[in-house]
Structure formats: structure tokens, C-alpha cells
Image (cartoon, rainbow over the protein chains, first blue to last red):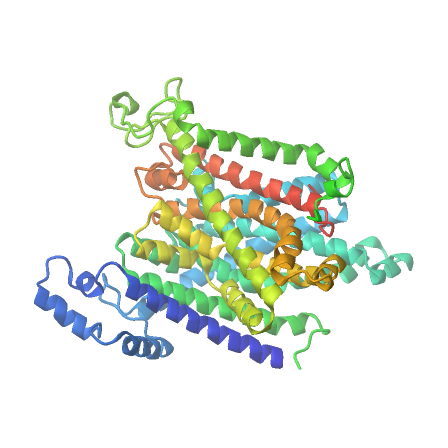
Length: 305
Length: 297
């Protein structure tokens, strides 16, 4: 229980720190936010009115407290370019992003875990070296290069999948695969080293010595323990993917939160960009908490309290 | 006091670990690639066959489209009729500058924070490590995008952002190592002989951190290069007309079906660079760190 409370406290601290940071960024902004809302042709009077409306003429500390109060209530301000609340905008795009992330995690597990297990079964073999080389290439390939390559081969040369857009199952395969392949490399490496460690442990050797079939030893005894760190990895993936979706969604034209950032960068829509940073922080905190909650379910040795 | 953890100081010749390092064909290939890349960056003006910023009239087809690779334009031309090969050669400068400078700064920050937190300990140490923990929970790429988008993107802003974000994991590793080193006999011996704190820190603890810094520095170049490429691809990194690999792909993204070479060549360069530094870093880790497990490479 204590550890869990500590984690929750740390999560709140992270969210607070991100709020301070995003507020600081908004203050540091070289351009005048009131001017950006008003547009370049507005009169000085209009700009001043907007500045007053946005509360930008108040002292910094007061602005910050008002800002914090709004953030706590889930109000992230208004978009400069679309007259809509940022929170509303984010929430409308979030389901598409979550869908993509989930599919990405599925691919990541499907590719990374078996690769790690296979590599660990015969360490040093040709297969092992090949798989590890692939995993290195996977983590060294930026997602936009991978995404564009997949699009070129599987949507243009061999039109199996659509060239971007979203809606159907066919649309989600390539972007999810892009997210999955770049993460699978890490999974393969972690699973491999965990497997090697577990396979060398006494209880596994005992089971083998007792004459239990190797396949049973691997699936029943070793695998269960070797896969435990994967839970934590999935948890932190939720945060890592928040960055990845900006790239992947813009390559594939997937209308989620990431595409929103890409579009917001183009028109310097600061509240939207900062809103997504805060959403990202929330997702990281939630992801880590979920992993903490899942550990004791998977491993009876872990108990909080 | 040459206990840097480097095996040469213990035995005259190469230890088996270092022998394996120098004999591993993959690691040597990676090393060769890194050397070639460095030469490319340094001697770009001599190596590039053409001016990378010049729009060649023969660089565009009659329809105004970029030209595929041929004997004149080895890697083809871009949307403005510029020579892609020359732009890629110059692009190595941006990548390696970020890899060396930004990542170098990140290594210094990481070693500094980990060292102070571990050596001084107490409240300062706790606060520093809490801060580091906090940083690990930050959405790094999103933060980098926000920072660079807001602070008017440029090469130097990108470098600054990478330096400020990339030190976190190293600080944690260094912290752990310093705690370990502090209790080692030669350190406690120096202390009991009356060496000052500064002397112990600089002469005995810092050298022990060198191998870690080298390994993480090498692996970090890979992360930094990829981060710069991603930021440039998103349009918040290095700005045109400065040629950067990510930026080239950004400029030509919408034409990638008709001019795939504009994505393929810079993409291969980013992959080669990141992969080489990763392999080299992994090789160094296995050679230097006695507790490192073989990764199977």
C-alpha cells in the first residue's frame, strides 16, 4: 500500500511539474499570445481587449494559480486557431490514438516476445545473432523512415493496404506495425536476457533434472517469470507511444492526437501543443500506475503492504 | 592511480574481452562506418561533388519533377533540383554535430548530477535523484517538440533540448556507481590517508566513471541522432535550407511514391548512423563492463 501511495504521490508531482513547465513555456513564448489569437491585422485595441480577456495582464503568479486551477478542472485553454476548447479537441481525438496504441502494443508483443524467447533458447546460435541484429536495427530505425518504407512497399508497390487515412482494420495495420516494430526490439532484448537468467536458475535446473520435458520447463516454469518485466514495459510504453504517435499519425494521416500536434506545429497553435504534452504526462502516470497494479496479479511474491 | 577500470592497466596485452571487441566483425564494421561518417562530416566541402544549395536547371525534368539517381546526380535530385548526394554529405555535419555536442553536454550533465548526488549524498543527493526520477516520467519526445516549436526551431535549440533531456538515465547509472565506488578499498584508503574530498572525487572516483561515460556517450549519440532526425522531420528541428537527413525527408514526404530516393537515401543514412553507434556502444559495454551480459551479437 505504501509503495502504491508513493507512486500516486509521485504521479501527482509529475503532473504538477509538467504544469509548471508548460506554463513557463507559455510565458517564455517569444510571440505575444494575445496577438496570435487576434491575428496579424487586428488593431492594438482588440489585442489589448483579448489580453485582458485571457487574463494576460495580471501578475505572473496570479496567472499561474488561475492556470493551475483550470488544469485541475481539466480546462486546458482555447486553441488559437480553432475556436474550440483544447480539452474538447483532445478528447475527440483520443479514442483514435488509443486504438492505434493498443494495436501497436499487440504487434510489439507478437513480434518482440517470441523473438526474445527463440533467441534465448540457443544463445550464440545463428538464429540468436540474427534476431538480436534485427532488434538492434529495429531500435535504430526512426519511426518516420520505417513508416514511409512500409507505406511505399505495402501500400504503393503492392497495394495491399490503403495509402494512409483511417477508419477500417486495413488502415490500422501499417501504422500499428510501425509502432510495434520499433518497440519490439527492446522487448526482444529484455525477454532474451530475462529468459537466459531464469533458465540458469535452480528451480529450472531441478525441473530439468527431474526429467520434465524441456518444452514444459520452458513454457511452465521459465516463461512465466521471464515475462514479468514485460508488464512494466507495457506500462511505460503508453508514455513512450504518446511521442511515437505524433510521428506515426502524421506519416499515415491517422486522425488522432498525434496528427493534432503535427497540424498545431504548422500553425504554431501553442495551447494545443502544450495540451498534448500534459495529456502525455497524464498517460505516462496512468501507464506506470496500471503496471504497478498489475504486478501483484501476475506475481504473487509482489505485494504492496 | 590509473584504476580506470580499463583492463590495459591490469595486464600488459589485451584481455579476452578487448580481444573479442577488436575481433567482432560487426563491431569493427560499426567502427568503420563511424569513421567514414566522421570523415564525411569534416571533409564535406571536399567530398561533395556539387554545391548542396544550388538549384540545378538540369536537376529537374521538363515537367519540373526531381530526377532519379544517374551518373551526374548519384543519389538523384530533390524537389528544387538540388544534388541529393551533396546534401546528404553535408547532412552528416548536422547529425554528428548533434551527436557529439548535444550528447556530449548531456553526458556531462548526467555525470555531474549523478556524481554530486552520490558523492555528497544527504538532502542534496536525495533532491537531485528525486528530480532525476521526475525527469524519467516526462514525455521526452512531446516535450522536445513543444520546446523546439515554441522557441523558434534552429540547430542550436535542437542541440540544447537534446542536451537537457538526454542525461537522465546516465545520471541514475552514475549515481549507483558512485555509491559503489565510495565503499571500495582504494577510495576509503585514500580518505584515511588524509586525502581531501576534492582529491578523492577527482583522482579516485571520477576516473572510475570513465568507462560508463564512454559506453553511455556512444549509445547516446544514437538516440540523439534519431531525436534530431525526428524533430527535423516534424519541421521543428534544423530548418531549411541547411541540409539535415530528417529535414530532407520532411521536405519530400508528399512525393515519396514518385521520388522514393528522397526518402530512401537519407533514411538509410540515419539507420546506418544510429545502428553503428548502438553496435559500437554495445561492444564497448561488453569489453569494459565486467558485469555486462553477452547480448548475443
